[in-house]
Image (cartoon, rainbow, N blue to C red; front, side, top):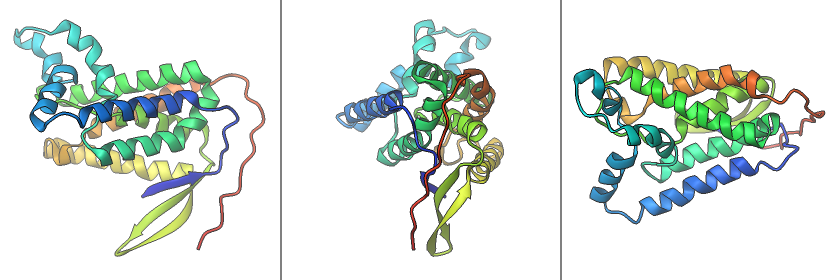
Length: 236
């Protein structure tokens, strides 16, 4: 399923959301200037590698400086154009409303905290993995979790594949995001039996989403102006 549009307009310009998208794009444009070997070395240098966070338990050297900055660096790295586009589309679609509800500074803090929670959920499930984890999807899963809590009755125009065809339907956010999370959770369970299944950090998505659900009521501004729905455009 691919979300296309929702019916909750923003009342403030979401400049933090747009700045995060811009930062991710700029970093990716830097990545594409590298060869595959250079990019692999770059990821190993700056991205989160779960085994490094459990090195102390094995009596191995601990790269303390990297352990502190790598979770933030990993949030802005991507493995390809589709990886980047998918993440940025979800951030664009759901981030503006969550930022509107939290305020700019709180939203930025929330985004980073969700990303940290996602990182350590993945490390907890894959403590010995030597594979770098990259992508904003953990933090964005937190944004999706917050949207789930804040706007459960919002309607999401959704592209749904049906066999060899696609259909466009309007789903309540509660249903769309609920189905999305069930897919992440099921995939996460399967990944326990088949490590590195598909190369996706499913438990980062799960951890980020749960963090978003928990943090959303705390980070939400106490006073919010009246909201108005917009009619989702007609389609055929």
